[in-house]
Amino acid sequence: MNRREGKPFLINFDYDKILGEIPHRLNESLAAHTGFKTGGPADCMAWPQNREQLLQTVQRLRAEQIPFFLLGNGSNVLALDEGYRGCVVKTEKALTELHFEDDGLVYCEAGIQLSVLCKACQKNGLTGLEFAFGIPGTVGGALFMNAGAYDGEMKDVVVSVEVLDIHGNLRTLSAADMQFSYRSSAAQSEQLVILSGRFQLCAGSASEILARMNELMQRRKDKQPLDKPSCGSTFKRPAGSYASKLIDECGLRGFRYGGAQVSEKHCGFVVNAGGAASADILALVEQVKTIVKDKTGYDLECEIRLLQ
Ligand SMILES: Cc1cc2nc3c(=O)[nH]c(=O)nc-3n(C[C@H](O)[C@H](O)[C@H](O)COP(=O)(O)OP(=O)(O)OC[C@H]3O[C@@H](n4cnc5c(N)ncnc54)[C@H](O)[C@@H]3O)c2cc1C
Image (tube, rainbow, N blue to C red; front, side, top):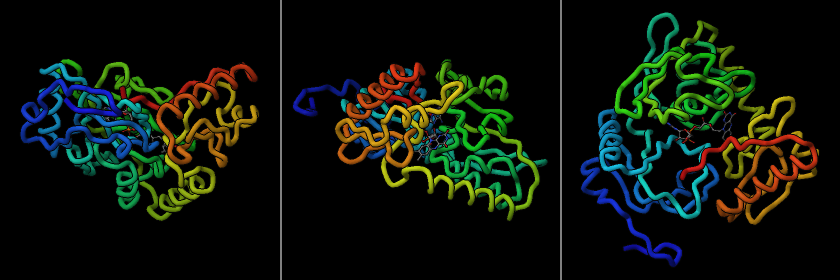
């Protein structure tokens, strides 16, 4: 029996026995691993050290019917204040292979940072991924979310994705099978564990690719509140408008709830302005949605994934 915020709770599973040699920690603070830097502890967090260990981790957790959550960088994840009753599985140490194949094909495992993939492609004179430079997170998170920016999306460059499905089968899905759409993929609806992606890029000038990457990074620095914890754009872009424009027009720039705030710099970002609880962020998001709906008629949809 442990005590958390004065309330007794039980860790129901013997993680030490179940995970054995796979590195893991009990009661790991999620604030240290998620974009807003908020959230209570996860019962367990595991860091499988290679692909085999990651597959083992998932298999063992499933066999014991333990809820689990794959976590890349946590750049698009909000953890609840009450934490997570299950095991969070980090991919960063497990899925780290990146290699170049013939004719502009690139194989990259899901735990690699998107920025590392972008830089490697640039150095190899391969164009197509410039848009993704500056999106924080792993390749797995980017595929799961179909991350995108500046008129590019992951779906534009994906050829296939290697996954572990809910039945424990290893499968290679085509880009069509992945059903990519705006900030969405089949990985979300089918609870797929993404292991790697294969990307088709084109030959280009390394110096021009670098210049474009630097230009887009500078735009981010100029426009986004990168000095404050956030999960990037909080809301999806509604058809026919922009979330940040609607929020601004409703007079919500700088609007606060507790430690959560609509960024002064970019209204599309909710930020942790200091000492926010996850409950503050969720309450602020709800208030923004209500006010925007009342004043403009637009329904805003949250882009951020809840760790629950
Ligand atoms: C400052 C800032 C700017 C941002 N700008 C952009 C932007 O321009 N465009 C954009 O699209 N996003 C943006 N984001 C959001 C975020 O960076 C992206 O969604 C990113 O792709 C998340 O990657 P991650 O590794 O951090 O995923 P996480 O946040 O760890 O996870 C996101 C989701 O993916 C799932 N997941 C992660 N890895 C796997 C895997 N291997 N298998 C199965 N599921 C997995 C998680 O379970 C979770 O549901 C921004 C965020 C910040 C903080």
